[in-house]
Image 1 (cartoon, helix red, strand yellow):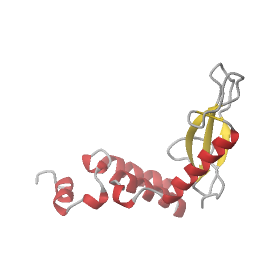
Image 2 (tube, rainbow, N blue to C red):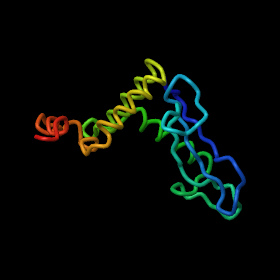
Image 3 (cartoon, rainbow, N blue to C red):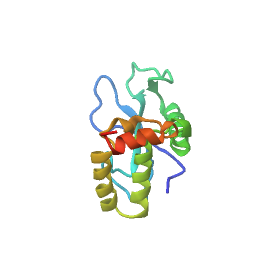
Length: 148
């Protein structure tokens, strides 16, 4: 279940002369994860630089104040809620959606085992970048049986 409100935060650590960065973090799973790996329960997107240094003026594009960062985080949340456009969904994106759903419905182990099989048999093949709506039986048969 996704949270309805995206979270906005600055990157942790020391601020250098370029300042810190705004991030949007949106929970997409039921459990809380602390890492940013592919198995994370969060979708994280860098929004832009924070205007926390005196010589930085927010421009709304690359340098953001808090309100601008919140606006971009809301856009990111809406983008995640919409999901990929149906006519642009690739096999790779469909696999990612399936794995996320599998992990929510079952357990992380089920995702890991299934993901390793997808990586071995599907995602290393050029068919992974094909659009789902453009797939034809002959192409699927050629992927399944390379001697064709």
